[in-house]
Structures are given as C-alpha cells and as structure tokens.
Length: 108
Image (cartoon, rainbow, N blue to C red):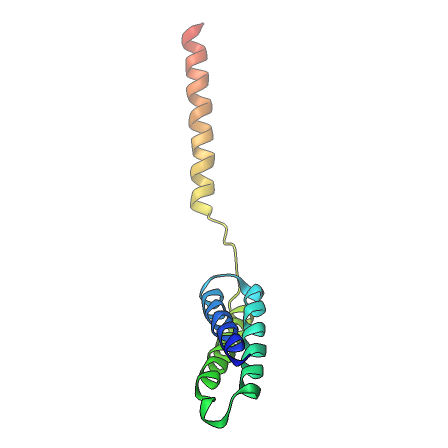
C-alpha cells in the first residue's frame, strides 16, 4: 500500500511542478492538492527511516503551491492599446480608399 501512495505522490508532485511552470493559474492547484494529500498519507504510512522522500515531495508541493499563489496574486494581466498599430491601420484604410478612388477615376 505504501508503494502505491509513493507512486501517486511522485506522479502528482511531478504534475504539480509541470502545471506550476505552465500558465494555468488556479488549475495548477488540483495536482498540487492531490500531491499534498498523497504525501501526507505517505508520511503517515512510512516508518521513521522512510520519511525523507515524502518530506521532499511534500516540500516540492508546498513550494509549487506558494509559487502558483504568488503568480496568481501578484502578476496582473493587462492589455495595452497599441496606438501605433491603430494609426497604421487607419492610414492603410485611407490609402486603400484613395487607391480605389484613383482606379475609379481611371476607369471613367
């Protein structure tokens, strides 16, 4: 039973680290939470001399949790209006309109 919890704890810890690196925001808390749960169960099932790996896995999950929480709270997504692009778009429309008017005059 301990081996099953060890495998699950490792898998969810790896998923937690991967999801932390990806821009998934709060979805990353799902594997982090499962990793923490399996690490705690693994700590409970382990003997005194077998608690080093579960402690490391638990530490990685908690650090991932802190990192995701910090990313979610501190980094704000802002969309900045690009005035230069808007100006170029308006100029392009004016030029296209002028070309169409010139073609229309040439056809007459």
